Structures are given as C-alpha cells and as structure tokens.
Length: 338
Ligand SMILES: Cc1cc2nc3c(=O)[nH]c(=O)nc-3n(C[C@H](O)[C@H](O)[C@H](O)COP(=O)(O)O)c2cc1C
Image (tube, rainbow, N blue to C red; front, top):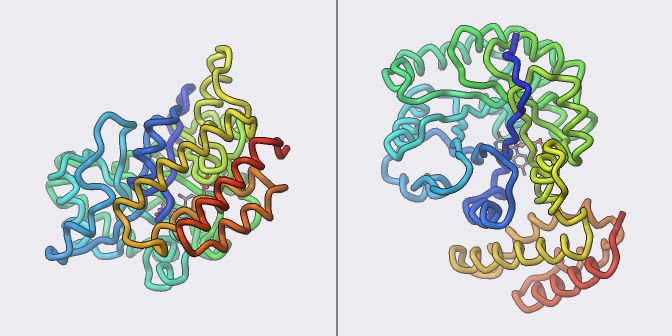
C-alpha cells in the first residue's frame, strides 16, 4: 500500500517544450503554491560532445526555487547511468525516469510508455541501475512517472511488481494508457487499483484544473503523497496558490480566475517569458512558436476569445504578434469568460 499522508504536496508537471527553464524561472518569480517540479525529459545519452546543449534546460540547477527533479527518457541502462551521473555531479539528489511518454515516435522505439508492455525490460534496466553505486549507495534517488499501460491498464500489475523490487522514491501515475494520448477521461478506477499495487509513495497526475478537482482527488485517494498538475497550472498559474489558500482557510489574496487583475498578472508573466525567449532563441520563428504553444494552454480559460487568440496563432512577425497579444489581453481584461 502507498504510505499515508494527510498533507499532500503539489508538483508542477513536466511539459516538454513548454515548462522550459525560461518559463519556470519566470513562474517561480511571480507565482507560488507548488512544492516541487519534475523537469521535461532529456534523452539518455552517452555522447559527451553534445553535453552542454543537451543539458541546457537543467544545468546548472536553479537555486532559490521549489526543488526540481530532472527527468530522463531512455531504455538503455548505460546511457541512463551516464546521464544520471552528470546530473548527480551537478548537484541533483534525484532523477525521474519517464515511463509515460505516449508519442508514437518515442513509444514505438520502446521508450516512455512503450516500455510498459515489457516489464522484463524495465526489470533489467532497474537491476543494472540499482547495481551502480550511484543508486545502490543512495547518492542519487530514483522516481518514475508512468501511465496505467501502453495499450491496456491490465499491463500495470506486472509493472507494479517490478517497481516494488526497487526502493523507488515515488511513482507518479497518469491514469490513462499510452494509446489514449491525452484523450478521453482519466481512469480513476484504474488509478485506485494501481495505487494499491505500489509500495512506494504514489503521486496522482491528470486533469486537475480547479480547486474542486484537487479536493475530489485528495478525498478519494487520501493515501497519495502528492498531486502533480500540468495543463491546469498553465491555464491558471494561480491554481496551486488558490488550492493552498483554500486548504489553510486564510482569506484569499489570489485574484479570481480570469478577473481583470488575474489577466493583468498573466499578461505581465507572458511579457516576461517573451522577453527572455527573445534573448535566448534566435529569430521570430522560434520565439513565436514557443509563445503560441503557451497561449494554446491558456486558451481554455478564454472560450469566447477565439478570434483574438487566432490572430496570435497566425502571427509570423514580432510586430504582428505584439499587436495581437495586446488586443487579446485588452479584450480579456474587459470581460471575464466564465
Ligand atoms: C506538450 C506536452 C509535453 C509533455 N512532456 C512531458 C515530459 O517531458 N515528461 C513527462 O513525464 N510528461 C510529459 N507530459 C505529460 C504531463 O507531464 C502530464 O502527465 C499530462 O499533461 C497530464 O497532466 P495534466 O492533465 O495535469 O496536464 C507532457 C504533456 C504534454 C501535453
């Protein structure tokens, strides 16, 4: 059984290409309420030459912010260990293994959720990893982030048995199967069964968009050690703080969802990110692609601002983008969407 914990941590989920270093640094400065963050995956590599660029999202580790755990995607123990060693040498105390990525390009190569139908491969990798002094001596902890299966949640039982042979520091479960991608409802029955099979602390992840969603999960699964939030924090960056304030019973200082003050603060946050991307990325193509992706996660908060958002997503120059953003936030400030 997973351990009991009445105070449930809140984690920021990794979204590759979205919760980048630029986005996270800016988020930490402006918002609060999360205890830890799992970083977007880096591929397990042995190639030493490409190191600097390869690790740019997580090296050097950020300081004065919630604890960050880098994540590794791979299916080869030697590369995994070499990547983990680099992260340990840089000061990290834990790495997370990605066993959930659903994208066919990844999963068809037996990585991410593509490993879930093959518990014997997972076992072999964990066996080698935990034979290395890095993990055997506890210099580095290992956690995993997974789904209920690749094609079926029936796969989870064998996967759980394998996990239980090792002292994993946590198992985050996103209750969908890989072939679902992010479609359909989360399978809470499947999560209930899965969490009972795991010895390590279990973290819930999936479709938490409101304070109520958080409470429903917390109430139904009181033994989970943490709840991880991804898209919900992008649609409402105040969500974690809102949850914490509701829990403590303190008077709220958080602007109401989509209120003019909320819109103003989100606008400033986006300006901040935009300015940073302009300094680290080259040219409008790259910068605008990043910003448009962020806007796509904000869009569910503004179902009646489709036209304004469309202008942003069609922009191809800084000037057109900046005008479209200004019009969107002005429209958003003038009327709450729901
Ligand atoms: C664009 C995108 C990129 C993602 N990248 C990662 C990743 O690098 N590592 C990972 O473990 N999960 C990744 N995920 C999955 C999320 O961490 C999370 O499990 C998923 O969004 C469900 O949680 P949510 O409903 O709170 O967003 C990604 C999801 C999306 C949509």
